[in-house]
Image (cartoon, rainbow, N blue to C red; front, side):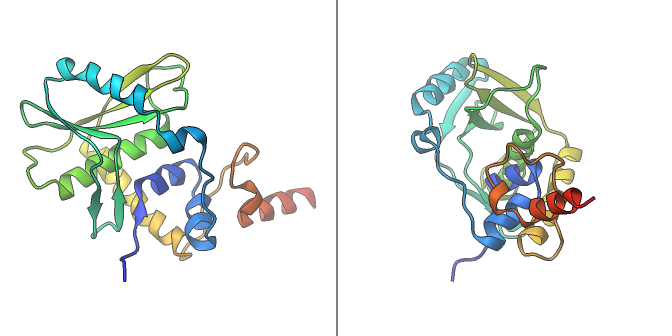
Length: 203
């Protein structure tokens, strides 16, 4: 029997709203695949990766790598992992979403990147040092990449998030939810959104 795990994508959703991992794992509702998810923006992704070869002194681009940790019950597959000539490993994520106005990444994308850093440290056999940075490439409205520095405190925080996400997914604790569910794709399936909206309408 295959061992149950959360995915890093689950964790990204959890950072947006904790209820989503219960909806997907506890109820069994899965996210509908969009056209971009189906085709993955492979042309844009490859063009971006080629741009990084010189800037980061890349010796090798690892694609299609599955990372996992039995200890954390977490698995994930980053868009790419750059290996520099100095042996540094840098996780990379390509996003169809637009970035915030400031030169930073969205919270859920940051959590995703930190989770990949943790998994690299726990499962990469030839790793020479800790993962200290990652990259997010936003395709809209104009392609741009943002470099993120990852601290040991960031990793500790995300590890605690993983532990809570596992409990929520298994129904052991109730999830914290967002104040506004109007733009959520899972709203129609969420028992917590229904309860909250019902109770507020009865006042």
